[in-house]
Length: 545
Image (cartoon, rainbow, N blue to C red; front, side, top):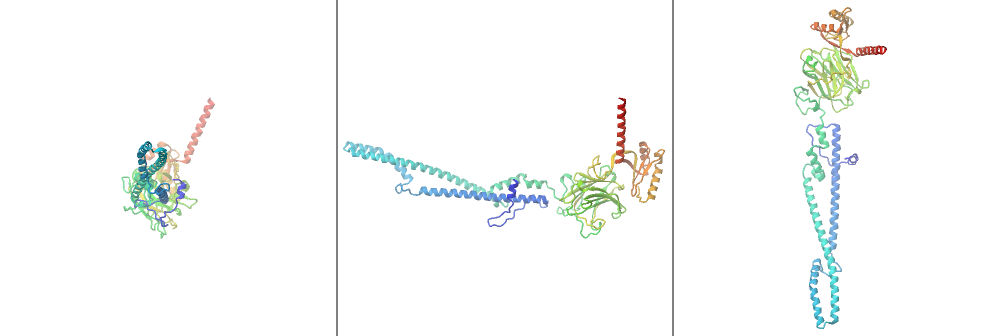
């Protein structure tokens, strides 16, 4: 089917009375809701079917008209042949001509003998002349009879051929009617379309059959994700009830004036930070959602126990379509104060707004909260607050508005919670928010799990405390301590790598520690130093040569 053929057949089906007929709806599952792309494809296919149906009717009508014309021509010719001819005597038919011919052939010898007898007994020359004239007439009649006999043979042969053609046409018409009576709406389709329809439904390789087999409803996860309602690795936590018809999802209510008013809260049970940091246990949240094109923003929050009515937020996700050309903001909130957000341009991420549905995946690892859209790693929010140490229940909140009461516009269909293998891989430096190098710092220790501080006096007090506790590992000049403001962690750099290992072993009962990673600046300085050393070695070797 070419594009030109589709364009020429974009007309509704019209019956004999000139009224438009409604096309039969395609046989789809009861819970199937086509997407706009699929619906347009179904409409196009229905129009193509209607055009094919009209084309079949036109072909059948033309074939019938051709058959009627041929039949009329045959009857007129038959009437002309059966009409009495002026050059033949009345009542002279083909059978009489044949019998007359055979009779004349039989009586021809007797006529010759009679003439000889008349000649012997005094017939004279007059008898001989009459005999010769009679012989001439006999020859003329014989020639005309031969022509009539050949014409009769041709007529009989033609009649037999036409009879056979009529029988074949009648049998074809009978088979066509039987095929047209099969199935729903078959009376409107020709044999060719019936054959095509039965072939398509039997083999399930047609265009619509392929779309129905491969399409995923907007409210369902893709089968490739293996996120079913209940499985060994996780389960669907929203909606709670197993209702196949519950596909409307949750949308922020219009009456809401604050984030918590009418917000959707989903429990994420059985979370163990110790297991999640090692890529095990429940560590993945998957959300099936739809954000319309006119939506300006939407958001979600992940909180732990004791969040004080969402006063403390471990992870905040917020795409903003109209903010500075479109940005994705991930952040945290401690004691009601938002931290330094990680901003990502929306043109660097898959499309959030205007799609039929999307799957957002948030994975909790030892590094932080990794955000994926499909298979693409969009960004990461590194851990800024200590995760709950014991087994607990996290909560996922979908606010109704932002902090200023501006409404949010999106639809949440399903939420899945369970275990997935770590998707970021060993090297996630290409993702936004990943500020550290994968290489570990040989002498720097990351101390986490501290109480949050905000004033300068508290910062100085903490610095003094850490310098005192790690004094023996800092050598002659002592350790170098870095304490950020409004943070629950700090960095301690000791004299050597051996001293760092010794401090992590001896101070494990007092602090929660891990080896710090190299920052990008430190990596650049390290690479620059290596480049200078390599250049100096090359210069020395060239001078020696």
